Length: 158
Image (cartoon, rainbow, N blue to C red):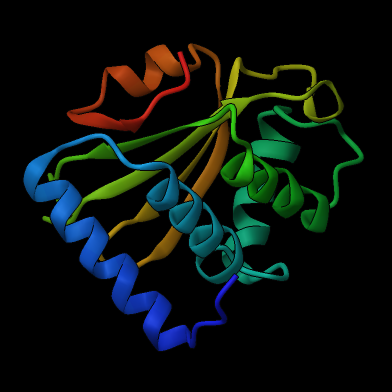
């Protein structure tokens, strides 16, 4: 694998997302791999931030989507695993309020991440243009929840 600078990675992802959202097409295997790697390693926080703690509080502590003893670090691990999961999908949602695209990484909820009110899929959202993490939660309706958004599947496993 070729080592790339963060700037080269960012430029590649920016260009890929621009082309993808313009033409609304399916992703190639290489593009899927690069998107997963980029968002899992560069866009998702490595360690709990204030935003991670807020989302952990909402989805783990309040909504009980993850097991009660899930730490903020483990919450991040579950989101990263979802992004990297080859059985997961990648969905892009058209701009609405902020006039920027949103990218969803969607994957099954492993048994170890099932809380009392778990969903059928873990959904991890990013602002696709700013490459910023928005949230990660478990959707009760799973992929059907994602299908209701205004967008298209860049990669769907079934």
